[in-house]
Length: 213
Image (cartoon, rainbow, N blue to C red; front, side):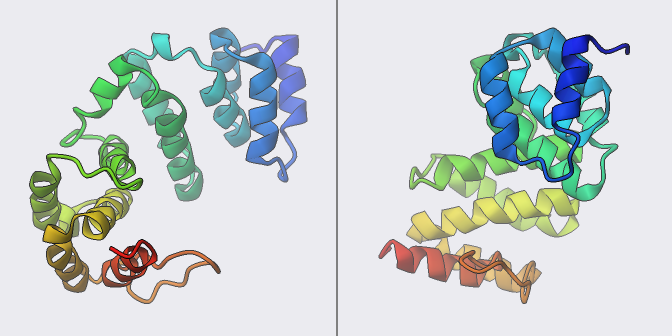
């Protein structure tokens, strides 16, 4: 796709490898919403350009076939960029509109592992502020049944959800701890200073103690 002068100028601003998310948010705040520009930036296949495109895309135009194309494109990135882009798309667009949120909530068993990831990640985000949901037992049962055979990017999101269920819903805490002990996921994984280990027994103990739960 031939880029407009505007798109080319923006691309020059964000081509530096030291570009930060704050830089992208600042540019997006100035642009507000510009669907055509978002498409141009997305077409470059450049990581930062695609992050910016997600911020300025018109969510009203995100029909499922459009989302499918975005997800397919995201899948072509390396592992780190892929996960950042799909989570960024979820947080900044898919959860901001009732139509796209309804789509997201239907992806529990989707063929795309990235769509399944954001279904489970979104369920975790619903709970991390201390708002238990009525379907926790059902989802926990499914996690217990399927997490060990899931793709790594989905396992992480399932583990994230189980962690927050274990923190805030005491009736399921022992099951969530036992799940972590059984799977061994993230046991011994190093984390940055100030971050909580993702291994469920440690995560649940630390985060529940912080909140006196």
